Length: 142
Image 1: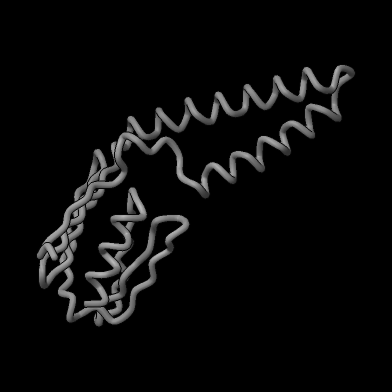
Image 2: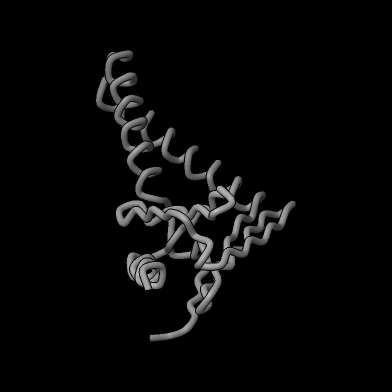
């Protein structure tokens, strides 16, 4: 088995996350119901309002991603976990020894999780693929 692994989050392949997509779908349904119940030609206005809502959501989301430029880099060695969190305005680095990890939780559906060090500090984790998450989980358990 490799002694280290690396990944960056988010990749360009990820358009929106599962939780975010679910929330947009629920909000779109509510916008559709509002448009459907408010006008004389319910189908046309309901669908038009949903298209406008989703378009605005995508445009605003892309602008925010462009402005903030969020990127997280993870590097796992034999003994330590390194995380680097960057935005346009800040840069934070974290380093935790595997022997100092008290608790961890990984979610295979949302591809995220956290580790808690003995100091009580919580470190968030985000993964691009289930394969990366499973590799990291195997590393934690070894």
